[in-house]
Length: 296
Image (cartoon, rainbow, N blue to C red; front, side, top):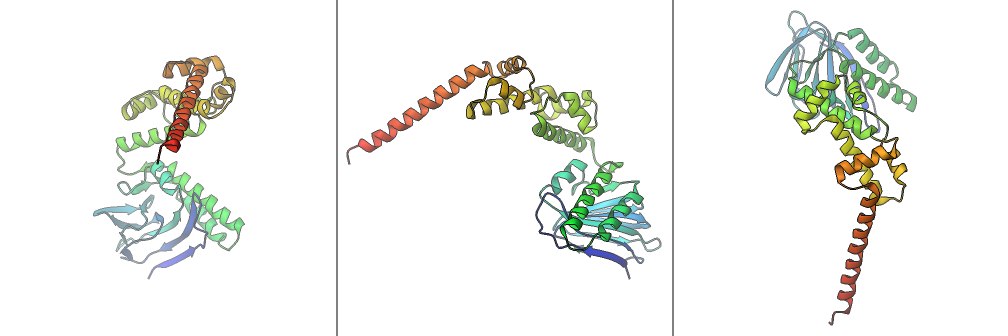
């Protein structure tokens, strides 16, 4: 018989990341679950003992210091060892950004196993969730905040087991691109991007060339100029304001970068765009008039 302490939480089930359930248990020999599925993500972490986890026709033998991810609505099976049954903790969660965070961590159906040496810290987090289990916005915020800490501890650990270099490289590029998309309006540099994803600038350059066919600097510039072009087309902001809005402190540097990619200055681009737009609108009006005066 499994000795378990489990809590299920009634949330609104909306948001970027929220806890569905959590718990911990000391299992009996050969205690098992499944094959069965859950409607949310579920992370188990082994505190002591041994067992097996079976997913997508692969079997993993796990012991203390390892954990596994179960995907929503996917059949999974796990069983405690006969001689040294495991004890583990678990957290079930969902949210609009849950998959995104797991992807960044390198956890997926291909690589569901991770290693983490911070067992005491993970246990303390889950214990805190269970101690704040009652209904109320304060406790819900507390639990969901602790979920972020729980995932961050795993993300900061030794990492995914059996993850190949290609997956890691792709993950670094995704994180770098996301960082640029969120921070292009600030005067960030490539070194800031590299520091954010925790790799050196040279390796970041190699990854961008391999995956995107361009350097990080060119991607950053191209993204900024794309946003600047949108502002030139849709607003009457001054060139100086558009430069600042796209991460350029100096309007002359912005103008040079814009010309380098678009082959024209920002001011000329705006004039030509609005001239062409006005011409298109005039043609549309003329067409409508012609349709109106056509004989029936």
